[in-house]
Image 1 (cartoon, helix red, strand yellow):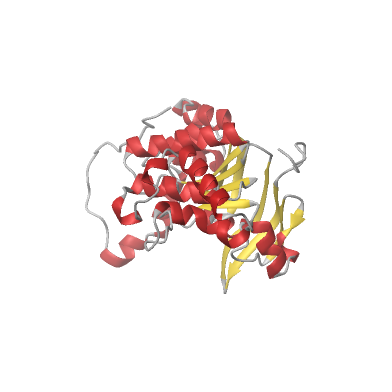
Image 2 (cartoon, helix red, strand yellow):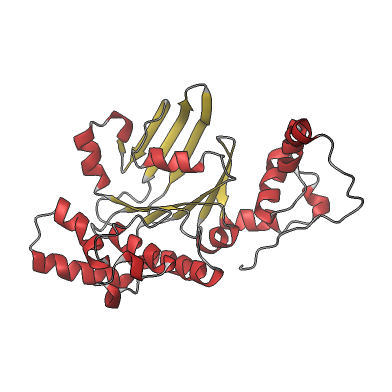
Length: 300
């Protein structure tokens, strides 16, 4: 990819801390994302994964630390410099974030009209190319209300691709989709990475999707990175026998519980120790020796 040094991170986060008042959401966040890879950032609700994405795109500044995109620290940029940098990355928002008053084609054309001096005929060609990439060229004249949720995600992705970005950020790309449509979005992410060579950062808690698309994965819990490793490492941990898993330290057992969706483990033990439900409602009734379910991934 032109303009990218392949031995240096495209994204480099160092000692990133984010506080909102008295609440600390991120606690010394360190992460490198290399050119052309798909990095999945995963964690439970409230873990800080969405906050980390918002800081990477310059939506909110860190309280401490530095965030470099394409070799430049966005924390030191003024608004004009930040806007120029934003032209080099695209974002697929959780809802698609399309403008309902515009057609699909007009939504994709919007960044080209706002940020380039291209002739309308060239913009029209670019829009058709981007919509073809996501399989929506024949739906260019439809409005968002006339297409399905999965099609809205694809249209949002086409718009994110409009300026030929070096980096794509995805915020929960599978959220709210049925399993088949979710699998189609996953395959589209993989195809675009191979065809265009873009670097992708995907924030998700959907494990089926994460294990399908990731090159590397980062597990975040309570604002701190527990582990950054290859997908194979996380797959091995997920499938590790229970007896071996019991010998692991608490952080690794916490990661394994999250990956497997087990009902018992460090996450639930931590929640139980807070005894919030008991404080509100009194002791829970005895349920006897009912088995606790384990949710296994459906796609591998």
